[in-house]
Length: 69
Image (tube, rainbow, N blue to C red; front, side, top):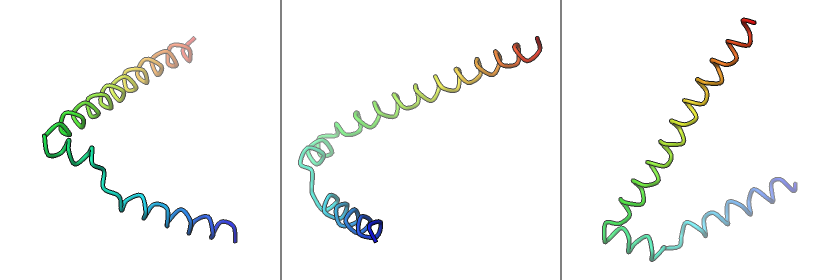
């Protein structure tokens, strides 16, 4: 019963949150600055992804070296 009540409350909360208009986002969208923000976020996320891929390769190489000994 508690899970159902909590789920209903969360669904109502999210509907209220999405109903609001954010003035800052509208202003940034109208001036074109939102694309700079999105570009920056994509750059950061791609950098983190690239770092994780390189780190995974290094760890796999070290695991192979340890396994051969």
